[in-house]
Amino acid sequence: MVHRVVWRVGSGATLDFWATRLEAEGIETTRSDDDDDGGGGGVGWLRFADLEGLSHELVVSDSEDPVLIAEHPEVPAEHALQGFEGVRAYSFDPAGSAAMLEQLMGASRVGDEDRWELRGSRRGGWIAFDPAPPARGRQSAGVVHHVAFGTTQTEHPRWQQHLAGAGVPVTPVIDRHYFHSIYFREPNGVLYEIADDGPGFAVDVPEEQFGAQVILPPKFEPDRERIEQALTPLPDPRASAR
Image (cartoon, rainbow, N blue to C red; front, side, top):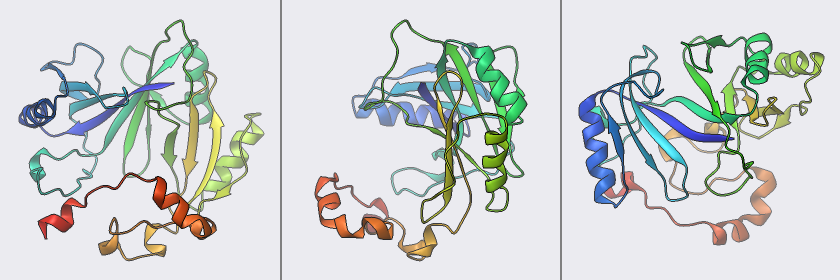
C-alpha cells in the first residue's frame, strides 16, 4: 500500500512558501533542511497529510529531468510543484518487490534503502518500501489506488506479453479512450499500471480548453447527469485570473 507521495520542488525558499501556504489553511507541516530521513531525490523536505490522511512530501530535487509546472494565479512559477519524484509504500517482503522491479521492469536500486528507480527516455521516478505495520491496509479514502508507469503505444502490447510470459497475472490491454492500460500487482499487493501515450486528452477538446468542463469517455456519456451530480464543484483558478 502506498502511504506517501513525493513531489519535486526547486529550492528551500519553495519549502518556505508551501509551509506558509499550508499552515494558513490549518494544515500542520514537518520540515527538514537535510536528507537524513529517507526523503530521497535531493536535500530538504516538507511533509504534511491531506484532508483524507494521505501523506505528501515536497523534496528539493536534484533531478535533471524537465520540470512539469502547472500555472496557478496564487502560486509563483518558481514555487510551483515540478512533478512527481516518487512514492513510498509498505512491504512485508521487500525482496519480492525488488525481484519484480529489477528482473522484469528494469529498475535500478538507489542508495542503501529499499528504493528503486525506473527511467524512460525523458523522465524517471522511484518507488521505495518501508516496513509494513501489523494491520493490513484496505482500499478506501486516503489510499493511493495504483502506481502508473508510462510507455509508448508501440511498446505497450510488448509489456503485456512480457509480464504474462513471466507468469505475472496481468490484465489484457484495456482501451481507456485517451490511452491504453494494463494492470498487475507486485508481490506485496501494490497495484501497478503501465499506460501508453495515445491518443491523449486532446482527442475530445483542444488543450486550451482543458479543465473548463467535465469531459467523459463516450461510454460514460449516457450517465453524465448522474456523474455530475455526484461531483464536488471545483473553482477554475485560471478563469478567475482571466
